[in-house]
Amino acid sequence: MTTLRVIVDELVSDQPGGARRYTEELTRQLIATAPRGCDVEAIVSNVSDELLQSVRDRLPGVATVTRLPLARRELALAWQSGLAVGGPPGMLHAPTLLAPLRRHNGLEMPQQVAVTIHDTLAWTHPEALGPPSTLWTKAMAKRARKHADAVVVPTHAVANRLGEALDFGDRIRVIGGAPATSLRLPPDADERAERLGLPERYAFTLGTVEPRKGIAPLIRAIARPEAEAIPLLIAGPDRIGERSATGVAAAAGLPEDRVRALGRLEDPDLAVALDRATLFVYPSLAEGFGLPIVEAFKFGLPVIHSDDPALVEVAAGAGLVVERPATAADEDGYAERLAAAIARLLADDELRARLGVLASDRARAFSWRDSAERVWQLHADL
Image 1 (cartoon, one colour):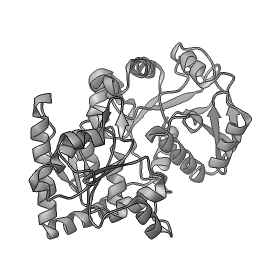
Image 2 (image 1 turned 180 degrees about the horizontal axis):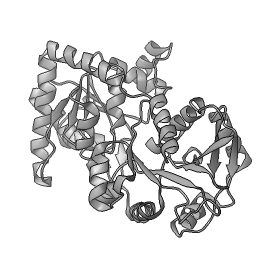
Image 3 (image 1 turned 180 degrees about the vertical axis):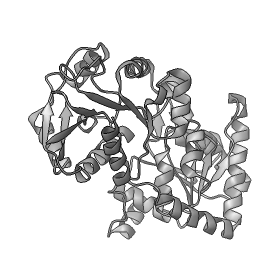
């Protein structure tokens, strides 16, 4: 029996986010698509028995779940230092950079190690990660350059940006993600829509007022007269540090009902909000993949997005592209361009319908099953 060992420590992290969802969805499909004679083992840091059981429950069909001797923080530091803490030799797949990256010869370490780098924020927008995460990411990426047999990235845009920082040669593999399998309309959609207070028409986005996400200029775009007084609903926390979406809206002179932060939405509520939106706007200035765009496509939403290379690649012409600000001084210009795009969609029923069709068609290009099969092929090639 050939075993693919997957580091799933994101599943026991107390920080929800894209890496956690990516890890769970990919690992489930790796189990489901395992070739004959192959199985999947999950690896986690030293967690409680309760958390260990939760991993087993979330990964039906997993051969076993191995608990390493170190807790997550200590494990991350040990692997950053190149210490040998890990399981037996074999195929190892890491959905993040958390991996035992050191010289391996098949005896003391796994015979092949593939890691995943989801974006290049550590190099392009370190303020979005903070100093500790930035330093750790860069250190582990350097270890990957020396010791990883393959590096998975979600888009060619990330591959190109990463290549400017580190030379991985021909070890880069582009394998994207997909919407969560749990992101589907629930049977009580009407009740959820009422509880969320969804208006008859609204623009929808996901994110926070973190500068990289571009939510502040989007709010200012909504304040412009050409936006036709359409409400903006935001899935995500209202406040980051001292800034808040409602504060930006108030400063822009918007009434309380024009911009609403819905907080973090569970998948059934998110599905309802996406399904009933008039349009979706994703103004982010830097992404590795841009999963929210693909999620909007799944519900046939007309999408407006920035010209960030990863978003342009993922959308592949199925969305309306808006030029990002070239400098910090151009933020007002960005808000004006976003407002113009919103106004164009609201005024053109035919364009909205056409983009909706393109969105549904583009959504079919993303599948966790396909991603998992490509990961299996990657390890077979190695």
